[in-house]
Length: 171
Image (cartoon, rainbow, N blue to C red):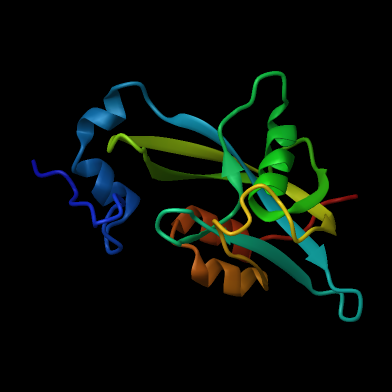
């Protein structure tokens, strides 16, 4: 069975779905399972209309739109790791809810050319502060969108669903 071809930047072709990619590499499904990451669904409410906007960032390698996310961190709870990723990747601070609002799966193309299937637990983060100078500034684009527009821009189907259905929970 042929493996999915990668483009020049080491990422999968745009037209393949997660299932198509996994079908082309069955060893990835049965060799170590899925890895866990934590993501931040950062949002703000516009005071005049009460509309919600969500934040997306681009990936460093391929420029795809995604939410801030990363690997588990020692001595940090999952929601705390999501807050830190939001700060490092997008320059936003806020309070994350302790329980995830959902999860999605995707394939992470590693620097060594290998691929890791990942499950991302997504935590809602209400943004209270935005700064211009942050760790990954210049490496990513950061932008605010309506949930519907954000869903159109991301590639992962499960993340699209999370964004379209997003309603901030509690305070």
